[in-house]
Length: 116
Image (cartoon, rainbow, N blue to C red; front, side):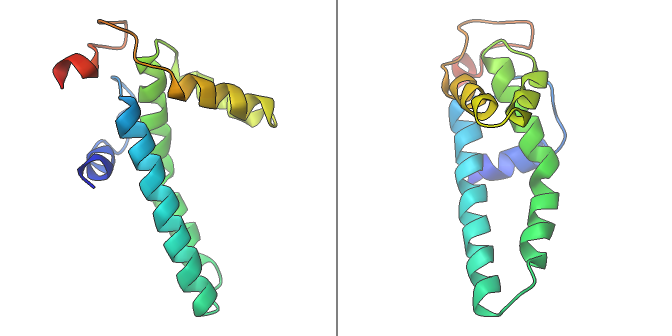
């Protein structure tokens, strides 16, 4: 839960690096929250407003942690745009996001693994 809150505290911080744990735990919590909100709206015949509001609230933090995760693999955050290419773009982005950190310091900052 702290990892999720740490990402929200860095709401629009696109600089620096993020470990795989930070990115994927944030992704997991978003997935679980979206599932719960969807279930609540399904039970109460909601209009999808809760899910839409939550998605809008975490849109910028999701982009920021994604950019920091790409920085950790020594790639620009602009690589997030590759996901706009149907299927193959998403697959390439997932491969980038699951790769291990670049050892040592890179142009985006020190290795967060070393700090931990």
